[in-house]
Length: 514
View (tube, rainbow, N blue to C red):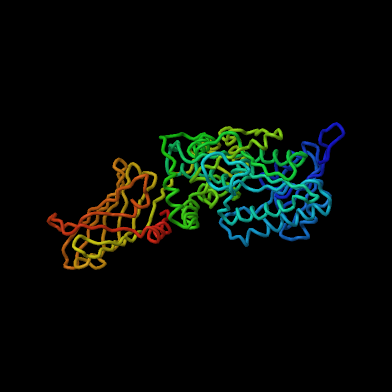
């Protein structure tokens, strides 16, 4: 590394890729503050950070080898923070930026005789497990994004004997100014919940994780870029305080200064069940389709930009279904300490930045009379249940369920029910009408509907689904009840269910806000 005679690091020229991003922009600012010269690299038209000192800007496409050479020319060290970080995209789409560009940048920096190459990878590479994860923990790339990051790491580790020293950083979920992906989207949840309930719940429980502020990742990148002992080493970057997802959600709500209502359990069992049964893409599509129209209304009323959007992706789902606690001990051996050791302190500052940038709404910046009018969202879904009666008759229930007002769901959890019923020898695709009622006290969904049989006689169905936190999907899939005639006499007992995978998937895909 470049050192002055007194042992202090001298000024260097730092090339920063992804310089308009969350970590990259902070690296630019901190490097300038430290007296270094900076080459800021990002795509054409990117919003480069404002700074007190001038710096060099190089705009272009890192998937072009020629531009990669131009990007790092004259650099003493390279901090590679750029990435295509959408885990839902295929490997082939992510590979040019995340793998090829890493290789080309490193080779170009080596040709130009740079002294250090810092690559910002991801802690999502680690296999999910209990306990603390250090840099030697087992890896398990679970998404196309993880695969590209692991491939880039593999290339760098293969160059251990090269002239250009490398350092790999594996940050946990990053939050803070300019952050758009992964954990940053959680900050959109409180405004969305507020569209449905006045008092947002306080959450408890859920998997534990220590996050990391973008500034602390930037500080780590600059430290390892100029520390001789960091050469050819991998470092985790995470804050000091693991929190449950319930605590994280509550901290995000408090950062808005919103009124908090009752405490509820973080739905880890439901998320885990969903992730085990369904292809993750189905879960993402359903969740994103549900929240998109709500977020659009929030954006329109508050005049927000389109820089931050709510969304669930593969990596975030992994973090929400199991512990991911990182050790930062190795990085601390270099003298690094997080400026934001606890997310509960840093998230308020992050929300304030987003609000000032018009990425998130500021509910206290507008008068009560200017608050958005109460918005009524209903929930609509379809379910196809098949089974048998105790008489041996085949039963098919083709149902459309409509909850008219989600905001009043707990006070009046009654849905309208329409569809078709078939029971061998009794009714063949006869129209039905009725209700589905949520009973929170007993944890049941109560189904009641009437229909006319093939003989013109009137019949009613009375049935229940018993829901529990231990097997929510299996419970939701099974309906048991009885059909009675107009005199109140039982005709048959019925057991019907959704196919646990295909039927539930179709029901999930049918979910929409009405």
